[in-house]
Amino acid sequence: MALPSVDELIMPLLEQLADGAEHSTRELWECLALRFGLSGAELAERLPDGRHVLLSRVQQARARLRRRGLLDYPRRSHARITATGLEALLAAEPRAGTPAPPAAGVPAPHIGPGPLETEVRSLTGPAVAKAADWAAVRLLNGWSAEGISSYAEVARRTGRSIAALHELDLRCLRDDAADAPVLDAVLGFSCAHPWRDARELSFHLAQLGLVWTPFSPAGICEAARRFGREQQWRTLVRAVATSRGRGATDDHRLLPRPFESWFEVEVFLFLEDLGVRAWPQEHVGVYRADLVVEGLASPLLIECDGETWHRGDRADRDLASEHVLLGRGYTVIRIAHCEWQEHTARIQDSLRATLRELDPLRSAG
Image 1 (cartoon, one colour):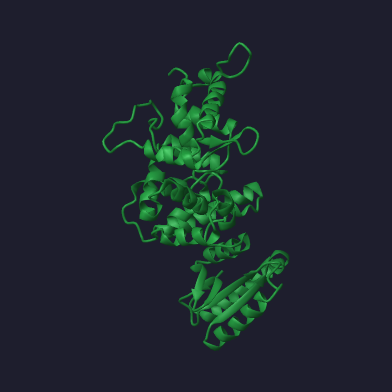
Image 2: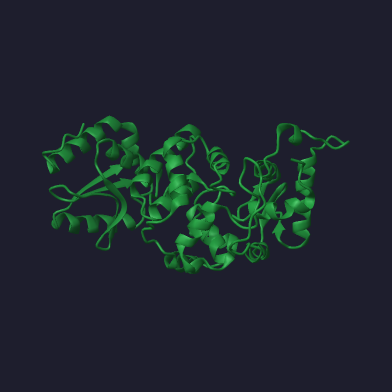
């Protein structure tokens, strides 16, 4: 097909920015090339001054959107949608039954979000009816290319208070979703094909017509957890941890919920390898444990203590709560991160012994 004109790039470009994240011009160029199914020869077309034709048109479309107040430039060669741009996207969504123009071999260009985003937004519930609310919830849950953002990060970017964001997040539905065919297709593909990074995963999902704007692996993992896909969630946690191992990053935006550290993920996966089902960040009364293992002679709580655990009065409160839990028949184990790193085999053997003691019928390693 012929290279799209500047006018034809306007709405697809805005849709690529719908996740509210910063995107480089190069990234937008690559996504739009995929969106329009352009060949290598088409992408190689150049202007007399040597610039790529498509890249030049993307830059012109971006400049038009900026002049209309629909996006801004947070830094050099990067663009981000504005609140006005989000409202324009919502108003431009096609009515039900409006056919989308065909495109051979790729998802049809279409005003509005892709299939996965549309379904996840519907499953999330009426709390995100407004475009600005949906943009905030997307950032919080990793339903964008950049991964899961903290309340503080989203508050800074949206101008909302942390309390307001927390209230919005609580209003979103988290019930099991029996009917979610697009999400199930994405989960099935993701679990069957481990990825190297978010861009590779998004590329393959786009080829299947399941997404048009990128979702982070942590965001897909969060969708599985929120909407009742426990087994897929557990498989995805392993895939995300493996992907992190390849990249050697400790970026918390890639950390799947509800874990609060990669250390917790490591211990969780060790227990999974033993055939032990652990539940991260579970509440036991008013106490929240890093990992809880049930179905034993007594419930087992595992605390994964990072380097800063012993600082301040939080450690004193945790130890007081632990004393109460011990009196009620709970077994509590504390594992220091430094000890896990230096004496992994010894601590793992100790965990196996504890599990055998609490469940004599278990053959744990």
